[in-house]
Amino acid sequence: MNPLVLDKVCSYDDGEPIGKNIMLNLISEDSAFSVLKIPSFRRIWVAGGLSALVRWLDMLAIGIFTYQLTDDAGAVAFTFVIRMLPRLLFGLFVGALSDRFNRKYLWVGALLFVATSYLALGLTIAFTEIEYWQLLCFVFVLAIGWSIEFPNRKAIIADTVPDHLLGRAIGIEWSTDSLAKIPGPLIAGGLITFIGAEWAYLIGALIILIATFVASTLVLEQIVRNTEDISSLDQVKDGLRYVRFNRLLLGALGVTFVFNLAFPAYNSLLPAIGRDILNANPFQVGILGALEGLGAVLGSLWIAQYAREIRFSQIYYAGTGWFLLCAAAFAFSETYLLSAACIFLLGFGFAAFATMQTTLLIRVSSPEMRGRVLGALSFCIGLGPLTAVQVGPLVNYIGFQYGLFVVLLEGAILLAATAYFFPTVIQKLTAELIQQHGRSVKS
Image 1: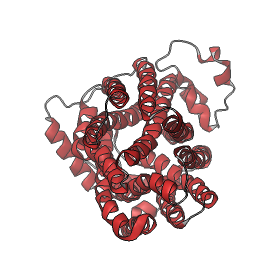
Image 2 (image 1 turned 90 degrees about the vertical axis):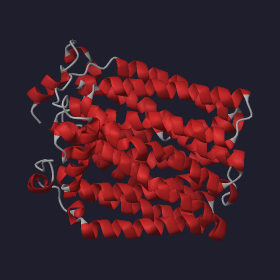
Image 3 (image 1 turned 45 degrees about the vertical axis):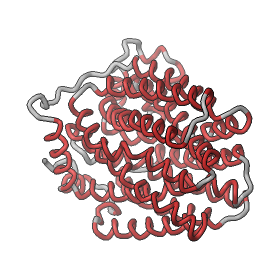
Image 4 (image 1 turned 30 degrees about the vertical axis):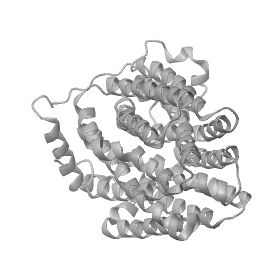
């Protein structure tokens, strides 16, 4: 890496000499953490880490609280369908907006909206007897905010980090996201067990407000895009056309669909399996979620430090397969310690998928199309959980464990089909492959 390039990037939006920060100067330029020398990325990293803490807190809290409220695993699965529905409905349009307007303003606005919604939900739980349909309304509103936050934050990373550091930046960002998965479920399980579910959301609102402040301090150079004479609908069409003729993107989005078919089923059944099969209380279920986060942290850090770009797509595909395998082992485990081991190992697959997903899509997309490509990603994330509607009937007919296994088996079949129809997703990510199928593809 050329140190002059890094020094130039480091002074991108911060007038203070980088030498004033002794701790940052101690970071080797060959370290995965060297990307933290970029002031813009540090702000994104901190705000994204705080947001991740709340997302993982909410992910477990909503599952436990819904199961306590309804005593129905199918209702929990449906809650996760509602949680992902805005990505399906609005993902493509949010991507077009991201390519049209200032991404920082969209990001900060989304965070402020999420914080307000968490505050309202916490107060509603605290002072009223909330009903299931009301909870679903809150989940849907919150999901709208998150569906705007996700693609804009990811696109901003690409706007502030040069291409040769992009893999490290995404790796560090996802390592932090995975790290947040350790305290997030623990906090959620502890608060629900010892104080009450409302505190999970009130504390979440406070943390998101802090993240909003950090995000607002980001200085982002506005990239000029020639979109004034193009309608948002035409932008969406251009984005879909671009993805359609990009076989690397199609394969990557196919793997995304598979993962988001399997993960909501696993995540929604975790509280039910924990309570009814493993005889665990909410805090112990939180420990299981934290172990997944620990495995994901270790996996993400390894990828950020050692993964070579030429292996990105293969890591992405193999990590998804490993996740399915470990989740299947968890499905049939009836002891807490064995389940904990399965979930810890599952975290490595989660890390490989999550880290490479954004990195791969950004790397093979042209800069002017990144917002729309990430919007397509958000759409695919929202499409997968629609299949979670099968979880309720499956659980009723064949039980928690076999119901989860059936969904995972579907994912394995679709994963194999993705490699068959889009073999580029399991090939080495060479410059020639990117040139042939990736960033050179025009809409």
